[in-house]
Image (cartoon, rainbow, N blue to C red; front, side):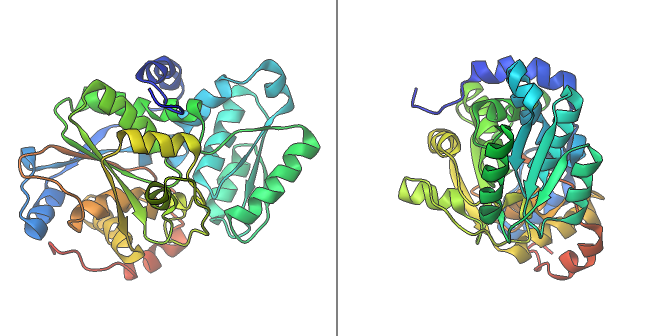
Length: 337
């Protein structure tokens, strides 16, 4: 086994604790999405339905508490007493804030000054101290390191950590129980923690399953790392702030190289088309990051074959409600419309 690989055994070890803390999210399905895909590409999926693992209905509005609650469980008594600090544009910050409160561990979250207000408010509502500084995640990183060192806090990574990845992998185990004959799974990608855990759980259980990631075109740190074979620093720019990691990590790069079948890139109008489709036709409100996997499928960007059973991860529902009209107005037309 290569270095920096989280095993199926580690994911199985994490699952009972994770399951005791978070929701077992439902598996939704959409015949309308399957019909759009068929019109766009001629591909007729199994069951005449696209399946969606509804992580936008998870605690804090995204999949993140799965990994974060397991990470906090791994801390020593002294680390818990001193408290944790993390860096995030929003969803990881909320998850650590919630997991910290649940475990009785003080949490400080550092976020860019332009972070989505609803996510900032949620972090404070969960009891975390929020530090807003920097024009982007890269600049906020410098402030996070200063606060960490000054206060003796334990840094909990938003994605590049084996405990975080193992906790997220519980989604893959649930998906196999709910849809054992799945052929293709599609996952939105930021830093890569979610797709790493899911892909390991799926591929180690059923190697024939194909796993694809979806990145915004201008927030493509993982794609660049795969292309160059090393971690690449970027300044992410996308409406999908939840997929705006400034770099992939050692763990996530290694795991994506080992398990993932491909990454596709989408522009923001295509991502917003997926978000609008979910609201109009499925009556589900995803944030842009949560709609990326659906958008990639509906726009025909994925190598899906007729007769295959396809599942998507709806990874986030933390929408800035004041911007919903802007998001929908910026959506491109879907090929199957």
